[in-house]
Length: 100
Length: 396
Image (cartoon, rainbow over all chains, first blue to last red):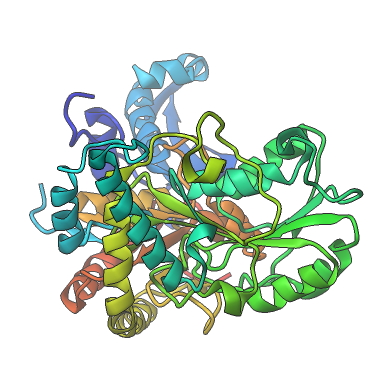
């Protein structure tokens, strides 16, 4: 913590917070192959993730998040990670993998 | 990095008044221990006692009723704990009176102290508040009894600015033979505070909320009322609070008290106008918002707004990136959803509680700064809502 102007979160989190990747903008017309919502507004976050799949591989991932900076950034990081990943592998992603 | 900076977090803390800074600079020379008998010590002590008198006059108390503490949290810990048997030394508590009543919207320094006391086996009741954050009088009357030792209700709320009717609450407490404490940390320096008019037995405040230094505060304790020290180990403050007196802090606080007494009315009138400008600006430019707190009985400097479908910490940090300092209703990064307890207690749902932002202004806030916030905020809210799973455009 030598830099007193250091931000609340790391640079990577900050970058994803400022420029979140793969946000679902046109929800109505997005043809997803699968969609899931997790979280609870009571606790302060909720995430919705929609994916497109072809040959058991995730070809696209879009999301929406209600939550704090780390929730927004981690959904963004995750969306970048899973594109191109096999469904089976994506199931095994742990929170620690996103942190890396 | 954005060049423009706007500080709108005065309820968290305030910058030192330039004249307070000056008086403290001179105060650095007064290094002697004010408890020492030699001339060095006596000179310092005289100054600190003059400050005590000045502070006492400002709140309508006697100088012997002013106890210097390390700040608001210490003052409040002292009051609450001395009214439980484990901390009181056993001697002074009236027999049969073992319960404390406080409110659901107190500052963590009261709520968490109360929770600690509950874990030690004490009975503490939390009185409900209404939609606007005012104490529910019917519930208060249900809770108070001949078993009540102490009632502790904050004067003005730090999150939503609601001001309580302390006079009536203290009167009811006294009718039942209970003692009354008010946490006046957000009140002193913002509204007139007079212990006689309020009729309180104890009152806490802190210098850094009104342009004084941090780490110094006051506990007012009415003469003849029970008192037991929280910090043992010395004769300072008449044996009521041990520890070498914080000369520099006291000098700074004395100067801050004097200045705010002279400036308060002008500052508050200006802040009320700025708050109206901010409130109507937000209402006009941003759809689906809720203004929290009491419409009239509220601090002139505090505006609390919930933005539907947008989470508070995200809003705060996007505003921070543009150079604006605000406070969220709840924050994950601090590891707690703490301030949300105030809004939840007023009956605001969790979504709006998490989507709230506190704007708290002060003597250096300008109209130009308000306008800058009004320029940036709508864009930030729009962006956060675009990403949100909750917001779909219509008002729920």
